[in-house]
Length: 77
Image (tube, rainbow, N blue to C red; front, side, top):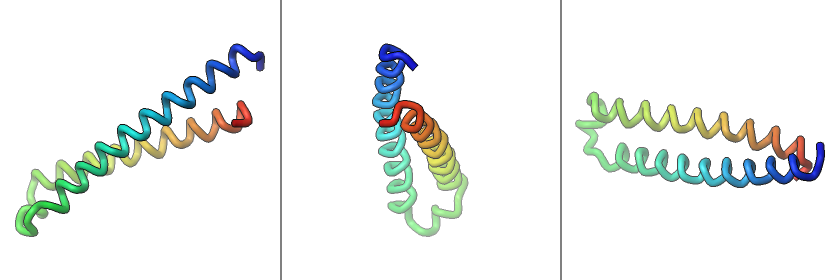
């Protein structure tokens, strides 16, 4: 891989890590919302929606982590 392409991948690496930080913050906020709900509401539809959001965000974080691992391996970061 030439120097320019390696540089582009390193830039992508940085942007993906920035995206991961944002997604993680949103997931944490969703989880905090769940945790702050009274127990009686934690079994309701609204809470289920928050839980689904957290699961989806966690899945996205896992996918991005795989991409980061691949870039790291490719560029020897």
